[in-house]
Amino acid sequence: IGEICLAIEMGADAIDIGKTIHPHPTLGETIGMAAEVAEGVCTDLPAVAKGRRQPNQ
Image (cartoon, rainbow, N blue to C red; front, side):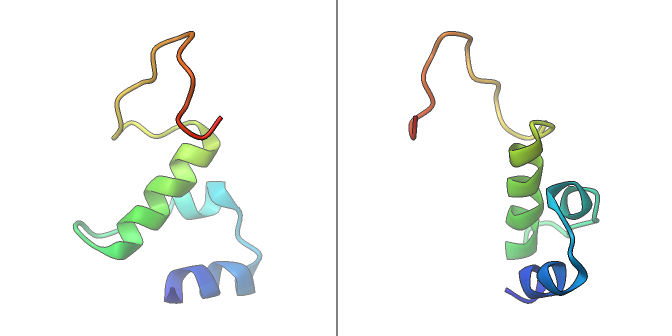
């Protein structure tokens, strides 16, 4: 929560958050990973096969 509050206060976007170092394993790491997913640059998750729907689409 602290990291998100700081990001809002600083006007950071998903790119800024994704480029920040996040220790492992922590809740903050999930914030960084979510930012990477939002920008389409996350390398920690398996790729979705083309033509398959995402669970929330």
